[in-house]
Image (tube, rainbow, N blue to C red):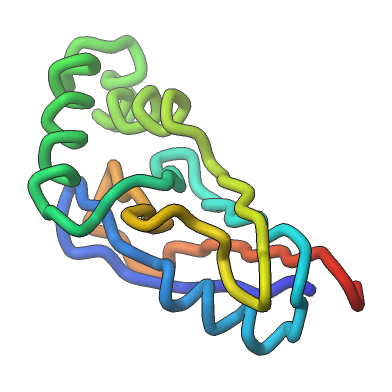
Amino acid sequence: MRDEIILSTSKKQELIDITPRISSIIKKSKVESGICNVFAAHATAAIIINENYDPNICLDLLDALDKLVPSGVWRHDRIDGNADSHIKSAILGPSETIPIRNNKLDLGRWQAVQFCELDGPRHDRKIIVTITGDGY
């Protein structure tokens, strides 16, 4: 099964918990046991699994990325000024694959699936969710 999540972002960089939306797609699929792949179809965005209980974790991650990959110092910046967003996206990666058990994401207690906006704000960000398992 394949489905899409379309969302808009409001900040230059932000992490958005998309776990509830993915869970809804899994429920609809009726897959009891399998895997779920979540893919950001953009070169300046990423998908990660991390804690979101404490919002400081999200802010700390973005701060760490900014320290590792400063803006305005890359060759690509002469074209459209967002080379740091491309580099951060490549470091984090465009997708995650999560096991499905009992028709639910089999995440750890504090884990959440997050969309990482690295070059916002943007409209119509597309996330592709692909579910494979019993029945598919």
